[in-house]
Length: 373
Image 1 (spheres, helix red, strand yellow):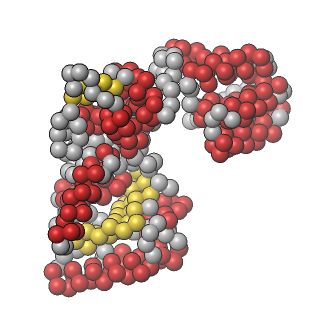
Image 2 (image 1 turned 60 degrees about the horizontal axis):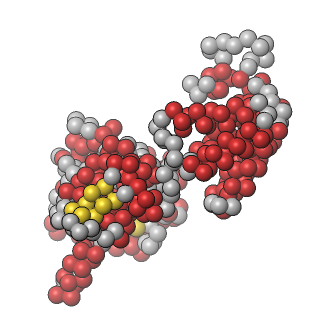
Image 3 (image 1 turned 90 degrees about the horizontal axis):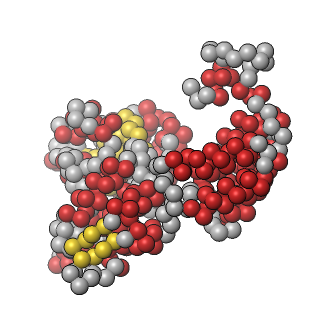
């Protein structure tokens, strides 16, 4: 590495997005995923003792898959190679294998090969990894947002330990914000940042378990908000709404109004009252409710309350939900209204949750499915 490379690395580190700068370096800095990284857990012990076997991490974006791989890279004494399946192919795999063989031959070191977005490798590319993983030439760590049991070569899956990372909890996201505001090296510890409780709650709520989304919104809020006369950067709810591009729900998201409104909406659909259903739908949309939450409740009703009286109901509602995902707001309101009116005017039947005899039984498989047991 020459002076220009060092200069480029320094600039990249300083100008990297906040989410990249705040990426944990050690297990102690890692927030969340206690079900696999809590004290005494297998994965934590394996990382601490540098006894890693082939692993596959899967879960939603922003839950720490790549971060966990980087923590392993900082902890292990093995040679660490990272590639991205989107940008790499068999050529890069062969180069990594050659390096791994040299490390074992000349330095007696293991090699950990981290493959980000491993599900993006096609079958032949995944097959190219298989013999080297099986022989122990490389220890594979894969990261994927898809279920590896469906998207990753079954032979690779059988040779790896699978760990699912879950969306971060609200308290985890609050801790991440606290770390960021107190870290003077990588975060905003050198600045006077004051964030209102309702603004922070809104950012955490909309981030929906995604730490990257939260930090991106926080970075935009801090970097674009001018300091006041006391050099304090004050993040209000209005600033938070602009930063994450979603209005705060006007009623308390965790309180009675949230549940009362969706309950009134469902009861209107169940009672075949299209006017009332549209009223409560408009109430929720105006309040800033997540449309996917509304569609999810309508999909349940399409089977639970309409059911076999109109089997096409679940098809129509699901199609409206998929159309909404493509179109988004504000035009997506048409798809919300269409699904609402279809369900409100459809005939109703609860035969799906009843046995043929009409007598419910605790051990009935139909009842078991209907109650989510």
